[in-house]
Image (cartoon, rainbow, N blue to C red; front, top):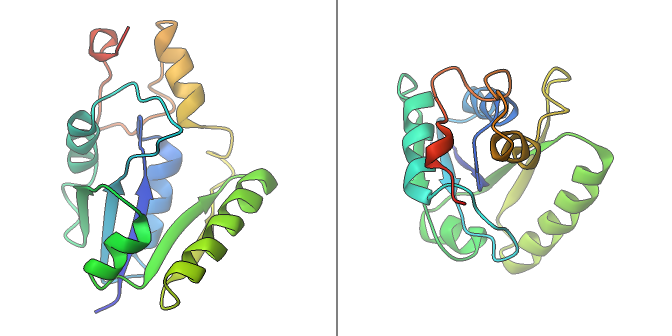
Amino acid sequence: MKTAIFPGSFDPITKGHEDIILRASLLFDKLIVAIGQNSEKKYMFSPEQRLLWLNKTFENYDNIHCVIYTGLTVDYCKANHIKYIIRGIRSINDFENENSIAYMNKALHTNIETVFLLTDRHYAHISSSAVKEIILNKGNVTDFIPNTIIINHHETSP
């Protein structure tokens, strides 16, 4: 069975994330959508809230499983016998950043392969950071997040 992981903060999940996840789920027998912690990021939503949204979004897909994890992604992969990391690419800047991370992951665990998927052009302009900014300013984000979730402004941190 070929298993892949798509790690991210998903703070919040966007339609771009949803598109990459659904496309990756067609390539692998099992896809783990994994909420990780990045020490450089400030989060708006709790990991538990983000996990609820992921589970709701992918509840009808038997081969997509959503989890929260801590530590390095490659360590999670090694412990769970995962050989593929999925990464979405929206721009050349994303590629340069993700390429560096992929090389570092390969240096840490040689059996891991990173698979890059280009974001659909309809979603390339959407980022979680931009969505968070819209939420902070009480704007409407329904065009940018999966149809299965609703973000209430009172759920956000001050």
